[in-house]
Length: 232
Image (cartoon, rainbow, N blue to C red; front, top):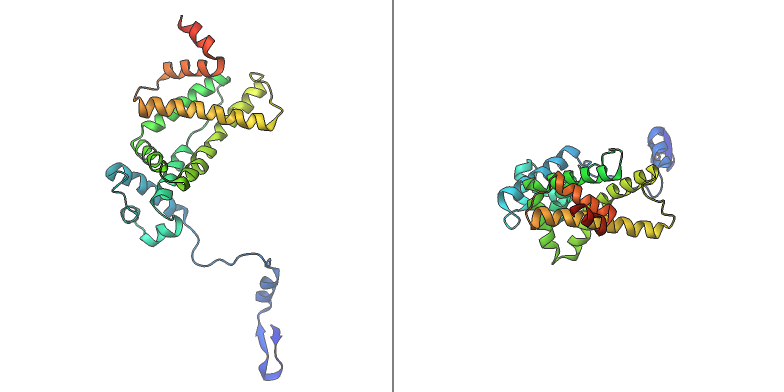
């Protein structure tokens, strides 16, 4: 026991181990209150959100309905998400995190494969409904657009970075020495691929099959001249 203050009958003691822990804690280390977040609860909430979107649509989806489906209190949702917009974006972002860039030995094969993966993901009812809903809402909500950029777009640019690094390692692409140029190129490639696939699958409602993926990849990697010569 260690005496902290006072003398005689006014002395106060704490266990030595408690004092050691108090002294070893960083002055800026925050103290936690309440129970830690549960990964299982988060997963159940996001799955319930996607199911609600499919069944009810954006306009009828409520935080209360999601809480009921997930088997949690509504206050649990509000401790994690400020509102419906943020919740739906995170529910969609988890789906896009499933995308992976396979290493098939060439940049063309890798691009074709990820295009087909992306298209298959967009065919899922929960992805299609949620993505179209948040994009529509984001036209009136700058904060929501920022969340989409940070939670979905920025995270998925990892696929372009991986593909570029592999292609540079194979000698298929020159190594870009200027980081600013490299970053702009990654942005452009992502916009071209994501824009083309989303438009084809969700706006035009045309199939994104192996033939389309191959022709699109040729256009992306070789330019308009090469694509035109193949069609001739």
